[in-house]
Length: 360
Picture (cartoon, helix red, strand yellow):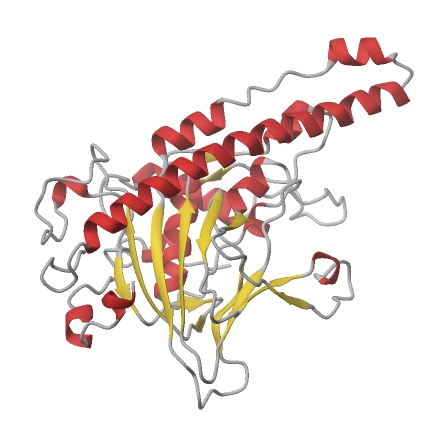
């Protein structure tokens, strides 16, 4: 990782991502429409046959590897010896670990919801035996299986240079949640800049509280796991996607490598927990290909759109509000987007700009 970011700027610029390719090098990402103080490099599982390709380590991807996120741009073997092989091996290890975690998350969700359903039935007068017999069945294998077979994950390398003359409010990354199902993160043990918002201090009700931030100090030889937005929708809000940010440091540089375990582009994520119990669904179904495309457009350009899962929340019906029964703009737009989008080709911000520009 350090060898890559130590390359000459011209070499890194040759691998720069663009509006038609989400993968590659960049130093101009926007989070919540504010520029991050970092450099980064993304690469992900290829499209098509999902194979990493031949032995040409100088390859810059190709049409056969196209997908919504584009193709991978690799530095040459001469510039960074062993880079591609090391990245692919680590990527595959993270994918295997993420699969195991996703299996446990889905099984745990079923256990929680079944226990709550039994308790509710007992409160309604049912016996414990009847409650156990009537406990809803949940297929805990479907979501992990589809993630395993269709995931569109990518690995990111981050470099945060020292920021000696920072303006007030300058951050390595502004507060955000991770978009996918879960994140596997390896942190820099020498510079502790990752912070997570304490849940009880998050805005709740008409009077937002001041957010309190807790520094996440890495445990040596351990990984940090984040729940993502899609797991939050799937669990109907039971699994919380933590709001987090990265501080700048006046003197120290920092490196990190998050692996984003993302659903397949064609997967529609909906609240499975609500189907297991008598819970009311909190979210409309979310199509991952649309969510990913909009998140990338918001990271790369200032479209004025930074998609969040709050855009998919089901609002309580208000008879005095004639708009309370209308579908949210993103829910309607995602259906139109998926009719015309081809997930086997790279997403183009300009191609879909008119469709994705909000006019209300």
